[in-house]
Length: 285
Image (cartoon, rainbow, N blue to C red; front, side, top):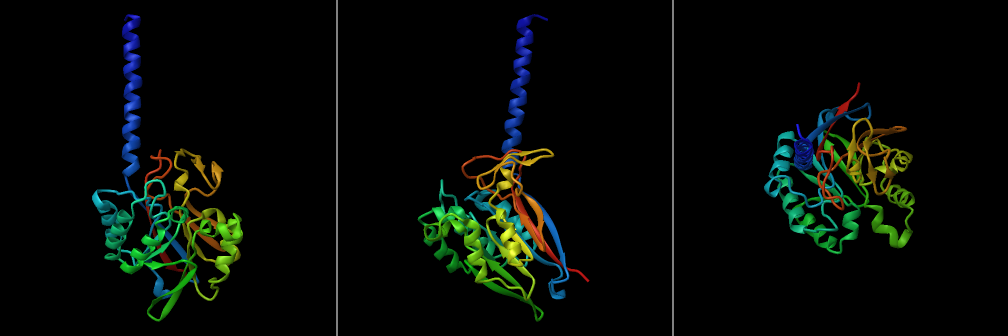
């Protein structure tokens, strides 16, 4: 075989590998998957055994299927009792209020919806428009708020905190202290508590306030995930973050981090499929 033919074969091989990599990344960027967590606790009332929460995080105006039909179909088939949006429903770099509202409107037909803000809502000047339209749809805005969820005469507490970035102007950039101040107004130690918050890196603050379960996002799974290593980079945590995706514990607090669904500054994911999180609450005898 001549050197020229060897070079051609080598180049063709490299091109084939690169093409396969591009196709794999493009597929994985929209290949939505569902992750189910069973959270067991003696504090969960018997009436809430099997209570199902669907978590949508970091949508960033992404559409999985036309008008998010694939995401909505997966939500429908999961049969949740409630749906929670844990921040960044819209995207600062490419804001489209209509996409977010249209998705929320369809999600409301599946189950009651609850929303907390993320850092992108804090950066978008049109956020009051989104807030108003979500409220008009009946989405419950959980901005430093507590809601009692009731079932057969028993209840659990659903808490929600606004993203700390909203309060920088008044409190500086000490996000941990901002979160402490916000949680101190709504903390509830009398019942099982589920907190909706965008920020996973503040788990120590959640534990200080005796939160039982936290549902968060923000980290995008580290955006690029390496086998056996995990996420590569999160803006608020830096390289190889501790809190990138999955279930974590701090004291008596459990925290689930969704890898999210959309992208933002990075326009694609690697080895990191978009994720719909399902949480089943289980009463432990």
